[in-house]
Amino acid sequence: MMSIGEFAELTGLSLKALRLYDEQGLLKPASVDPWSRHRRYSASQFEPAIRLKALRAAGVPLADAPRLLADPPAAATVLAEHRARMAAERERQDAALDILDRLLSGADRHEWQVEERLATRQHWAGVVWPVPGDDDPAAGADSTDERVNEAFAALWRALAEAGDTPTGPFWSTLRAASGSDIAIELVCCWPIARPLPAGWSVPGWTVETGTVEAAPELVVRWRFEDPVTVVDGVTHPAVLALLAAAEERELGVDLSRLRQIGLVEEGESVGMEVAITVSR
Image (cartoon, rainbow, N blue to C red; front, side):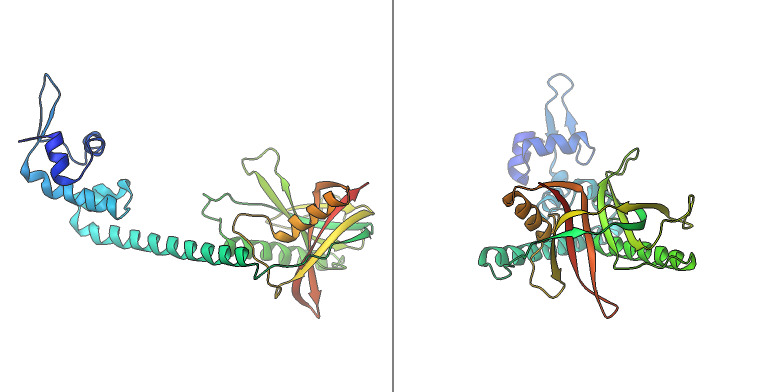
């Protein structure tokens, strides 16, 4: 029988790790002195200890340890799942390093042209969609884009059927959600010629209507083929350039009036523009 210190030295596991594995039932000592509470380990415990050491060295989550240690047929599945997670993480890291290279080299540096214009008064109808958090299964760029496209398409069809076909390019805006566990809402809008009747709705969607009032605004645009570096989780550089220009011109801004408007040519979406209402 070995003391916990001797067993730790032989297996490469720390005293803290051995105590944790004992508490979690992953590697119980062979015996515990009832008076001193000293843990004693036997040579027969080398194999599970070394497996735990290798498991942690490989970065396998401790939550997967019971399946890997106690259920040999499941071990291959556990390792395959972990390899898939590691591959996805390596891919994410490689993409982040590529972006960092471009940022540091200035290879994708874009000169943003910010213009000032007067927005005309415009009626609109929009679908309100709660933006899922990072821990939501619905989160992710692909699923979000698909859902947004569905919202725009469903709203366009409903407006056409109501005889109020959209009069221009789509636009969207983000806002803080109220009275909900969802923090952010996306409003997907189409401009329309006239206000809709009270109670107008689109089955399966939450719909709002309103009017963009005439007001001065700053606008910046880009085409999808423009070399623009976007860091995951950071607001698009066009929006940041717009806010920086407003500050430089000493203009007040209302972030709730920030709109992303589609650039459409010959029926195809070719880019976006960002506009925000300003005040002097």
